[in-house]
Image (cartoon, rainbow, N blue to C red; front, side):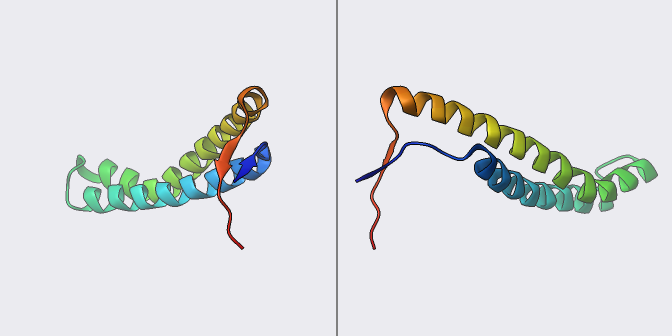
Length: 91
């Protein structure tokens, strides 16, 4: 068993930022499709539905980046005290 003793803060932040941006794109597209079927009120719903395809990925990406950086920072603190996560690696 190998132990993960430290996680690069910027590395995890970039990965989670990208994953959350993709998730935001999926949710934004779903929101846009629902707005086309009239689940929002009138033309403003159509505008916000189509704008969500751009807004959701950006906001989700920012939240993922910040959350990833905070998570890696706290993981590194805790891993110093109690050890890292044990991972089995095969070659």
